[in-house]
Image (cartoon, rainbow, N blue to C red; front, side, top):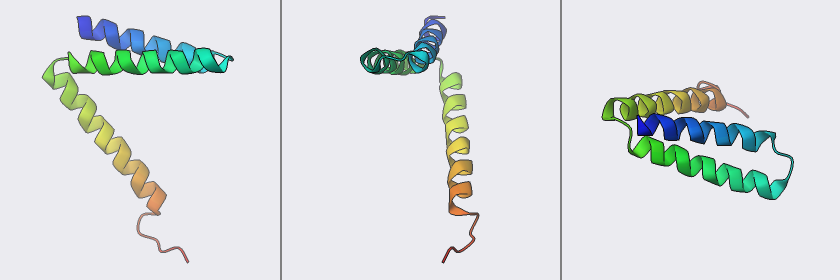
Length: 75
């Protein structure tokens, strides 16, 4: 339960940080949100951690393949 609270707080802070106009407040909020997300993921159950890891790897792989042009050579 605690991990869910920290994850939601982290996501909320990141959302608010992206809407902030002032640069210092934005940087501070982004750092705070990232720390909350990392802390929430660290104390989350193993199944949730594995789900997030698999989702991240699949998302990264699809972006990398798209950036590489799916094997098309660029001259």
